[in-house]
Length: 250
Length: 317
Image 1 (cartoon, rainbow over the protein chains, first blue to last red):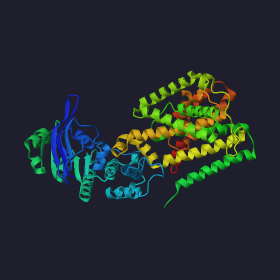
Image 2: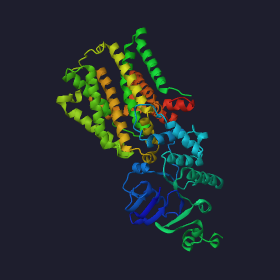
Image 3: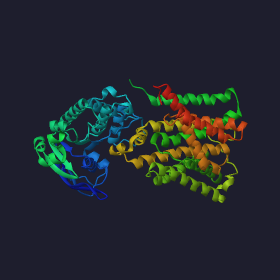
């Protein structure tokens, strides 16, 4: 699904966290959103996913406005997200987390007539676990999973909603270098298998330049640059504001 | 490997009921029978509260109002109309459920702290109404004149033994129903809200609706407990709806364990037993109760059943 953002704006008090941002994410694209801390990256995701309302602008999903819709309605249109700090249900096992997500997605969360899970829900949850590689820890409580597995579970919960557009807020946050690469390879695999429109926020430039098809750079709530990894790597504004130079690093 | 936990629960309930019903056949003890009757009411009261506290993470300080309302609605219906006992029972529970729906509609959108405060405030309002509306409720004297003990299904509730059996059956069926609710997809939804309401709302769960549902169901089952209490005291007293009574339910939940379905039942048992034993020896029963609760809070740091489950992992909840 194609995601078009037009002149999206959001202020907190006097601060323009997102300032007339216009971006296109073609159907099936794999894009990175980068930028310094406080650039508005997470706010950008929050506005698209409906965490809080925007002040003005448009978000079009395959040409249809979604900005006025509730989180639930956006979910049913095909938007799902994972969080910067892994967000799951800590007292439940991995399998229960995913069965609960599937139950909610199917609209059966108010059902009183039978025991949890409803028929068919376990199978769907197992399919998601298989897909992301959490089958081994299916019966482990989320609270005691490793950090990396918690991040994976967060993504798995989003995938249980059968999204067409998936927003990942720093999928590799808090991971060691090796774990980062494993994670990002998995994310790329999911993108290919599911034909997702995938947008991720990432701080590790090696990862970004390696896997993103296109890169959008946010700075002070505005779009500083967008383009292919090569274009971004050589963009002077981006180098000044964010990437720095070899000399800076030394 | 398919198991049938629903059947297992029903089997445990049936077994417990058989044991409780068989005891008076072997040995009559009015004190024990009184205890079970009071426990039936208290167990439903505390377990229904735990649907909010343990399952959903909503700490209500005003749950006693629904217990009291169940008692008053039932006793008044029995006194003022010719309805049969089951009809008055159902009517009282419906009235309580409706009241819980209305109170919940105001309360459930509030944050945790304000939710606790406003449930307490509404309860105090309800209590004041009972005290002031003397012509209907008898004011602080309570509702006197007794409850006409019309026979139902061969139960003659004026007889203690029959009341004992009736209360035991109602309590076990009520607990079984609560267990079913807690184990349903809706029960799982409540745990999702407790664990992480933000994520739950991104999965399509309408938080206020789920919370309002839980609040209404909990109120209705507290009302069932209130009906049993009314039968036991043959009337209704404002104390049933007063805030210390809500506190009793919270104590029962904390003593027994919030994460175990039967925790509040065990808590109610401990609380009632403490009450009975301690009042025999000292008038400072509040002091002893306080010490016991401190011991639990600082020593075990959780309720008895939760503690045992942690000590022997792998047991079912």
